[in-house]
Image 1 (cartoon, rainbow, N blue to C red):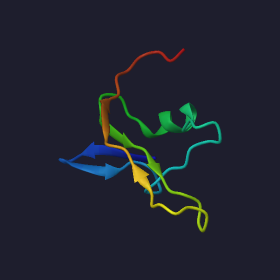
Image 2 (tube, one colour):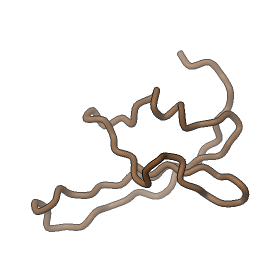
Image 3 (cartoon, rainbow, N blue to C red):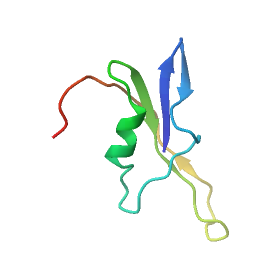
Image 4 (tube, rainbow, N blue to C red):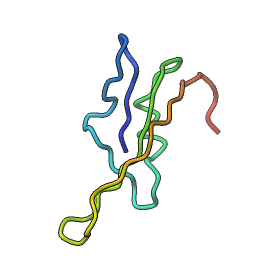
Length: 76
């Protein structure tokens, strides 16, 4: 999963690595993701599937970008 932050007029990588892996249950992990996001800032995410080495006959596939703005609030 790619996570980018809009800052100073450009999209920039929001995680320490370009592509962030999902947990085994398919979720990125709320506690880890919330540390990346700052209130009232713009972000975008894009999914990526890369087949295991040596096992697949096809290349990787990626989704389109989904953009959102983080708003302050209470997480329940």
